[in-house]
Image (cartoon, rainbow, N blue to C red; front, top):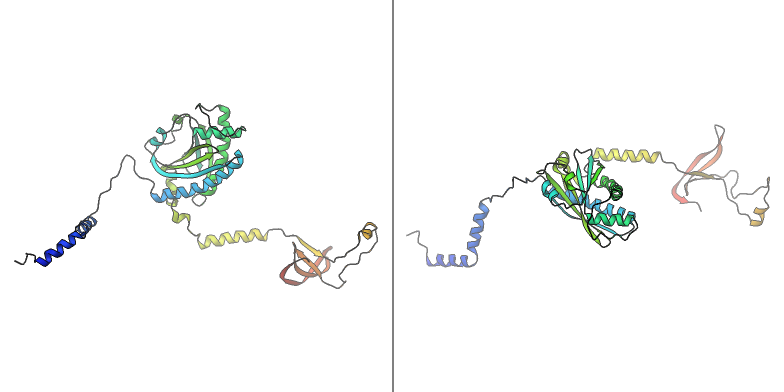
Length: 330
């Protein structure tokens, strides 16, 4: 009879059920067991969220610098922003390309392999139009790029690659070099189709034309520095030894800097009429006496007082006192 519930216990159980007790019990049961996660063996994950976030930070800095460069180079307002950073198989990236397309094959020295900068054809036409003095409009009818247009694009892309160095300097001293520009995606197979790549998409706006630029970065290229692609490494404070070495370099450079030093013997004021009548042998009285200290100026600041003399057959001044407070010459 001990297993039979009393009326009060039954009432309490019904109240708990009406207040969501059953759902709490089910939630506790679900939390007690681990749920399996699906994994796609065809496209394994090589870049985690931390890696992709770091790539976003790098290319956000790059977007700001390149937008400033292109705005000055093309003499119009350019807006570039990071739209997305994700990972995918290289075949999915290459299959999404529509010819003609601008594919810049980049050698990311000292890293091994190649990365691809893909620029939409509409943006490419707008850049060429601006270079040739046009308003920067895209072509209504898509066509292949001529040899002259390819040369113009190569010059612009080469300049754009120079701005990759600074955003990557916290990770590696990157020295990218443009190898070639292809307009057919079939001639830009830099890795195996199944290779996983990081795809960083940048939206770009040139006047009324809008499009995208994509950086395709294979996992094989950045695998040696994958441990550095995290925000902890990005914002880490340099070690004390590195800070001291950096400080010593600054001190050495400052110590070797040249400073203009001048000695003021005295001052005088004369009229324009007297100035016009000056001749060799005339004497101009100064406001200082023979025995007074000379003012030694460093730049525009009065720093020392001294006495005139000779040193090794040359005019010299001997420092007699220091000026504690830097004072400009009155």
